[in-house]
Image 1 (cartoon, one colour):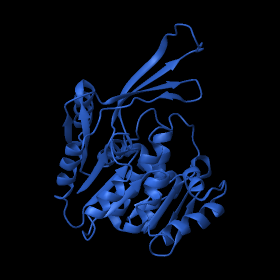
Image 2: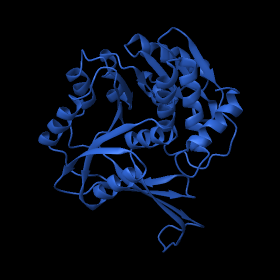
Image 3: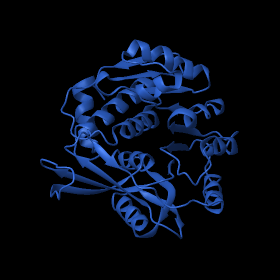
Image 4: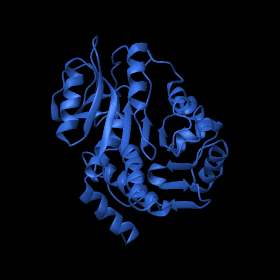
Amino acid sequence: MVYTVTFNPSIDYIVSVDDFKLGLTNRASSELLLPGGKGLNVSMVLGNLGIGNTALGFAAGFTGEEIIRRIEQMGVQADFIRIENGISRINLKLKTTDGTEINGVGPQIDPDAVGKLTKKLEALKDGDTLVLAGSIPASMPGDIYSRIMEHLAGRKLNIVVDATRDLLVNVLGYHPFLIKPNHHELGEIFDVELRKRSEVVLYAKELQKMGAKNVLVSMAGEGAVLIAEDGNVYEAAAPKGTLVNGVGAGDSMVAGFICGWLERREYRYAFEMGVSAGSASAFSERLATKEEIIRLYRREFGRL
């Protein structure tokens, strides 16, 4: 079974405004409400690919109930901890103005709620996959990812971490199965600017030396790189297509990789599925469907 954790899920309110003018009343030309959060995005794409999974996290107020309702409607099993005070955040994503976003704060997560999540994670069994993805609310300890991995140390779990800077670096000693920084995040860790896949390979190998088993790096229009546990390096150019919505593309790549690995236990196939899923979501108004992912896979890699 695959489990995802989203500490600060959201309702994403995606609005298109033609000829946006600051300081004046603007009218939307289109609008869309979607459940959001990196772990939830992974869950939804896994569901689209036919991989059963359970979404864990925290939900508060009417927005929290709506998040749960919507992901269950999509076929994802939700096992959220209800927070009594506050509301789950609403993120405003304003299209047509260079990707301007205003992200909400979210509810206060107290130690008791964190303890309930830890107890749920104790039920995971050997062979399960756990995805820890996204930012941490200010009310939670900043080292929560490493605390969780320390608590689960000794279990035969495949733990995937998609986070930035210290959140990511601090888990490497616990040997996560997969980490997925993008090339900007990878560069921030080492205080360098990375533009080419050859440069990314060098620094991704450093993260592997620090403890990660597999390092998957997304590079937007430059493609992607996988430094695999088996010693191989896999690279792919970015598939050709029109960028429609970059939100969730990296999360889709994680979901595609997990799907590919569970299906065949082959790193090349997992990598190619990751690239296909990430790009298919980037070329779609919403997170990619199985049909969109498979179609792009066949176009780019020619086999299944």
